[in-house]
Image (cartoon, rainbow, N blue to C red; front, side, top):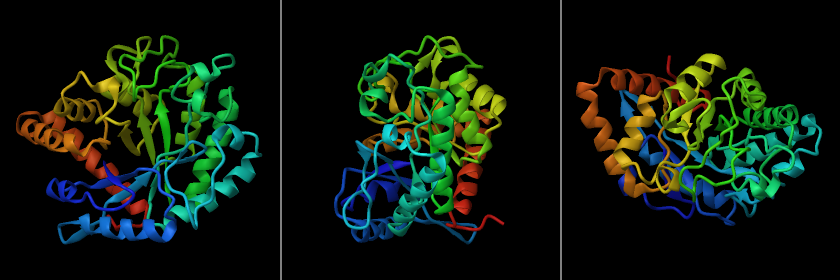
Length: 326
């Protein structure tokens, strides 16, 4: 999944590397009709495999508050998650279905939302990635679980794939992995109460889960979560039973992964059990694809992981109505 501008264009590198999913970036006030023109052009990135046309997933960040990429005519101004958390879950689900229908009418099939992270009482704005931006539904895991699940169910009603993020949680850190290296959560454990929103999302059938790029030494001291077979395989797949698409947080520009060569980022994420490498930096794409392709002939484990990942993404595309897997 590679970024493309909401203004259109930028398709040449995506086509050259047969990119299967796209993330719209860059705040837009152009409205639904203009975004629909952009997504129609992105549909031309579809590849044909075995006689079946496979269009790309088109995603964006449409959480609400400060994190709402698409606006203008036809798009509602969505309140922040803090404000959404004050609504009854039933009402939030109804509203989220409406926001999802707006996305779908614009040709967007994946919302990189909701945030399922819990910011504990007293941390608040000191939590740079979530609390400072009012992206949390509350300071109690049960409330966050109820409201984040309502949001994802509303999207599902609209035919938009939701993404619970950022597993296993960014609510207890202070640094933002986009801008800070070695962000560490020294509190969260494998059976932590703060995992409840993610567990509830999986039970509700969420199609995608995004993995954090922070470090969790009480879970896996040796790896960032994005490169951790314990976080992805043992916890998310095993403990929670998730069988959908595991997508990375940004592995392109993010400071958290800057010390790792781009090719290794892709190989390590897929090798740990991830399915969909997300990069906000199209310039990283050649190195990422080259590294994966170079390793496949000699690495049976990676070949198996890539095969599983491809199947998970194809099932998600079928769920979004983009193709029939049979």
